[in-house]
Image 1: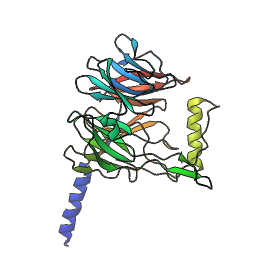
Image 2: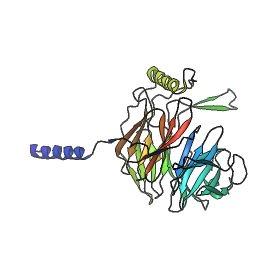
Image 3: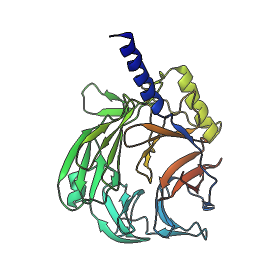
Length: 349
């Protein structure tokens, strides 16, 4: 190859690299509303068309409420029982068409409740074909054919109306330490500290994001079944050494005080890049909750677009986390020194 050809080739590479913009730092604008109501554990939110918000407070005193940021009013919906229109553990809230919502009863996960605006109008029992087709956790609902994305060992699309279930991806779960007695009459599986399971998010338009752990990247599945495989995203993959274990203990003591219980569980070899808490954004990207480690002690998120490219980063204090989005807003749960949470709304950039 001539020197001129080499020079042109290097110039083309430099231009291609320079064209890829560095991810921007996302700075949220000041909150435009905040609820004074204390919660014990905000698990999921769903913004309604009139601006009110459904909130599942998933704790020992579980409840589902509708909150009005304009008046500050909070009203409970349904009762914590096992009858029709009732739930044992208020779980994930998924937006459905026409201002309706699906609530997962997470008492062994397998009852769904349908809400029209702020009223429970239907209970779907565990023997319904859609629940039987794919027992697992829900990670989104689309508006195309009424399908769900549900994760267990595999990622599955299961129809709400039929028994059809299609496996579209194999996922890596948590690392586990398995023990058994000599007779092998029982097994005990312990999830290793620092590990993570791969995540799936189904978007209203039928696109699906799959967040991979090793290597750290995002795959996108289009509604027609074709796949976009994003490039590998930066992650240091630190070893779970004494430094990381001390940093974890310090975080827990900072959150819960000097008497914080430090779990004595075994650790994975290297820390995973993600943790639970990723969300689809209004514009169709995915905001990924990143792991904390000795060099990153706050709450951080990566914003990845539908080409798999890292386009932004969001950093929040350790006491704050993203719990969901509205069409133009992001909702932040803020935990105080006593462990109670409040809900704050910000304009989404």
